[in-house]
Every structure is written in C-alpha cells, then in structure tokens.
Length: 415
Image 1 (tube, rainbow, N blue to C red):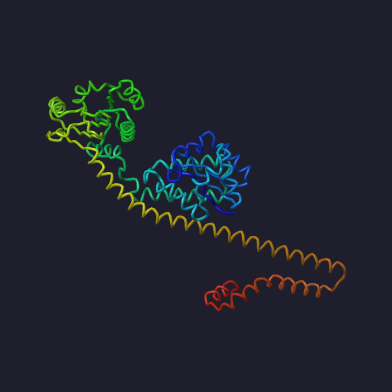
Image 2 (tube, one colour; image 1 turned 90 degrees about the horizontal axis):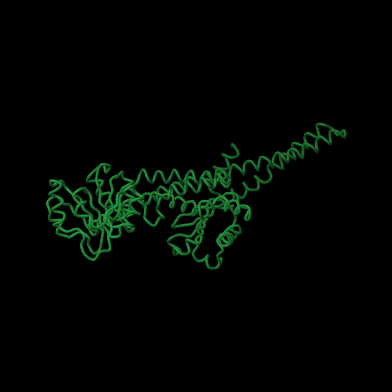
C-alpha cells in the first residue's frame, strides 16, 4: 500500500475547471464515505480551496485509478477531459507535497498563511468521517509540526507580497496601533476591499468608504462596520483622515494638491499618510511636495513587494530543507512500523511451527513412544526448521564478503 496525493490546482488548470471539481464544505463528509466505500481505501482526506482540490489516500496503483474515475464521476465530468490537468504523487513525493502545501510553498501567493488552517480543517473533517487511521494520523501531525516550524523559524510570511497588504503594513509601521487611526478609503473595487480586510485584521476600526456610486460604497462599508460617503464629500472628509488609500478607475485625479493643503491646515498640520494604488493616479503627484503629506504610489509599493518576494523566496529555500527533514522522519517512522510488522509475523510463524511439532510429539507420547526419543526428535526438528531460512540467507550474505554485513550477522546471532 502506498500514500498518494492526487490533485488539480492553479498551476495545472484554469479556474473554470477548478470550480467544477471543488467540494463544498457540506459535501466533504459524504464524499469521503462514498470514496472509501467504492474504492476500499482506508485513509482519505479531501482538501478543497479556491485554488486547489486534492485527495490524499492510502492504497494501490489500481485504487489510484479508481479514485480518479470516482472524482470525475462525482462531479459529472469526463475522465479524459480531467486527466491532463491532474497530478499524482506517491509515497515520499506525496508527503513532501502535503508539507509544501501546508507551509504555503505551493500557494498562488508564496507563504500565504490561510492554507495551513484549511489543511487542518480537511484533516478534522476526515477524522470525523472515520477516514484517518494511524499512518495518516502520523503523516498529518508531522505535516502540522513542520508547517509550524516553517512559520516560526523562517520569514516565509513576514513580508507583504501584494500592494494592498504592503500599503497596510506601511501604515502599521508608521502609526503602530491602528485602532484609533481614522482611515479614508476611496473606491469600492476589489483592491480597496482587500485593503479593508487587511486593515481590519490589523485592528483598524474607524473606516470611511468613498465611492462615485453611493450604494456600492454602502455595500462595502457594511462588511467592515464602516461609514459611506460619495466622492463629492471627500474634500470635507479629508481633514478627518490620518490615512488615505485610493484605488478607482477614474481617468483624472480625485485628490488634488490644493485639497490636501486645505485639509492639512484644518488638521493644524498633523501629518497625513496617503497611498495611491490607482493607474492612472487618483492623487496628484504634487501632493508629495507638501511638508506634512507623505504620499506613496503603486510604483513605490511594487518595489517593496518585489524585495519582500525575494525575501520570501529565500525563506522558501530554508523551508524546503525543513520539509526534507520532516519527510525523512516520517519515512523512518514508516520503516519502523514495517519492521515491527515483520518481527510480529516472524514470531507468529515460529510459534505456529513450534505448536505443530509439539502437537505431533504429544501424539507420539500418547501412543506410547519412548519419551526420550520423542523429545530428541522434537528438539532437532524444531531447531532445523527455525534455522533453515536464516542460515540460507546468511550464507548468501557471507558470499558477498562485505565486512559491514558480517558485523551485522555477528550482532544478529549474538556471536
């Protein structure tokens, strides 16, 4: 039996196909039960996120083919259409892949932290469904330990690798505690929504969303307990803002030098941090000339992101070394488990042989045969039967005339 990792992700398939093979959270338990029942595999875990769907299972090569067929059938897809987009890793490669996924090394954004929680959720769902047995219990616990070490001992997640996160990280560095800082967000698209999420995660609680379409501003503001205004209200609101982050599709600047200058006067020249994530720019370049205004553009942040991405890639190399050690430790555990099974089987075979010969000896004694002769025959036969296979193997090893093998034989035979 082997460990397999079967999957499809952002590297192998477009989003349209990934959507078709995704499992909704409420589907996973039933899917696991169906999978194990139809294929007779024992251990199975389903990991399904926006960027990947992966199945980890313990089985044979023929069962791996059954799992592929089942995956296609479950989602009403043609197996031949799905096959070119799948990857299949086995044993050490499967364990290494799982550890890389959990550590964020296989993510769309290198080092993103959410994936570890998603792997843990997939493990818990499988455990509740009864598809986690000792081997997978050990594999996933080792994976969690390695991923934690990667997070703790490397900088894989320490640096911002998106302009939205970079903008918020920079604000955090400047202001420290964001709880009492007032933030004006201009725009209501995906970038501003992502900025708002990062701000909320960093403790910011006083947000205002300004947008050309007021209803859209309200919808976004409701997600983050923020207030909403229109773009025409920005000049009045600007004086209240410690941080201004803008990203719209406007072809002309929304915030001009004069507007910021007036706001700074009202603020009694209390500094203002402005980030322009728009192309074309939302904030006039001349704003940077004002003494108490600190303006960053998307280009400024891109250089920060590029440097941080380099740092993450360096951290990823450290993480790979940790993963290699984790895979080796898991492989060693597997080997010890296999040896334990081998020793148990060998002892059982010896016990069976002894019982067979003992039964024969007892029958001979019951029939009146001389006890001394019976015991002598029993001891000789038992010794010969027990020694036959090991002696044959030892002769073969000795023929190779390798010193380390001879030393091993002396140790095994207590010579």
